[in-house]
Length: 327
Ligand code: ADP
Ligand code: MG
Image 1 (tube, rainbow, N blue to C red):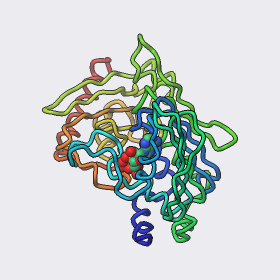
Image 2 (tube, rainbow, N blue to C red):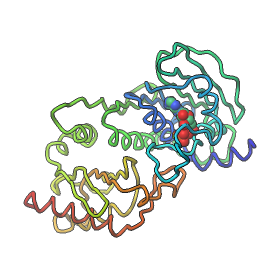
Image 3 (cartoon, rainbow, N blue to C red):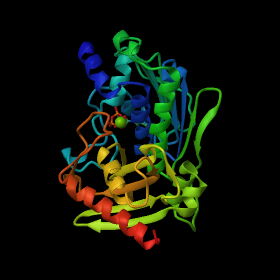
Image 4 (cartoon, rainbow, N blue to C red):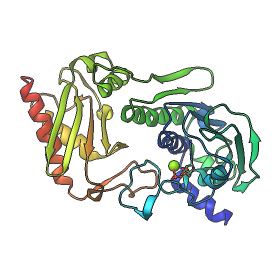
């Protein structure tokens, strides 16, 4: 059983950034309004995620670290997945390849509890001290799987990867405050957006993509069949030398898809040289039957039922916005 766990764990937790992604998504799913992440030595020594979400009682905590334990699948409906996590694998997987401690206090209760899992070996749930939410500590990631440990990149690279993951989640969740620290310094900070007058999403995007973007980005809002595309697209005058600042979210999840960069190139081709790329963040909402988020366990990839329809919508929405802005 433990061998199987370790093999499967590699699928979900490839590197520190994938552990961070799973843990932060869990915090979002738990209704947290603030999520603080600390990574020491690029996450190899420590990944700590602290949230103020609804927490877990002793029984839930004990279950949470078991494989295929999830509280998120209602009526066995694998198609209609509203929450970010849904496989019940992340905590078990991390526990299989690291020293994991989960401390939690269920909202509305007065007791906190902790459970430890080391290399797949689960210890008994014990009373602990915590005022709110959940604290996850992952130490010595991959200590029990030396092969995987060998494939880790430098601490700096792993930390940057995790920073990118957190940044994308922060764009999708403007109502949640995020920080990332290396243990000495907070290198990413997205304060909770409380603006009642402005656009909450634009405020958050501006905090991450810059003032210039916030002040000049074109608003996107278009529909085609059952698809809806919203978001903000930077002016051609505010472009970059690479396409790394083009963000796509499908049903609220950050995804990486070449389709986006291609569509963006098509839309901006009359305005930009080939080696220039606009900055943008687009949010595509589709019926869950239109998209397969299950392509990769880390869930960064998607497969659309009709990629041409998505591409067409993105290209026409961007062209329309550019033309309307007089470009
Ligand atoms: P999944 O997210 O797919 O359900 P995980 O292994 O990531 O599986 O988490 C297992 C369960 O543990 C979740 O379904 C949830 O009930 C609980 N859980 C995990 N992290 C948190 C958290 N930060 N706050 C509250 N509950 C959590
Ligand atoms: Mg999860």
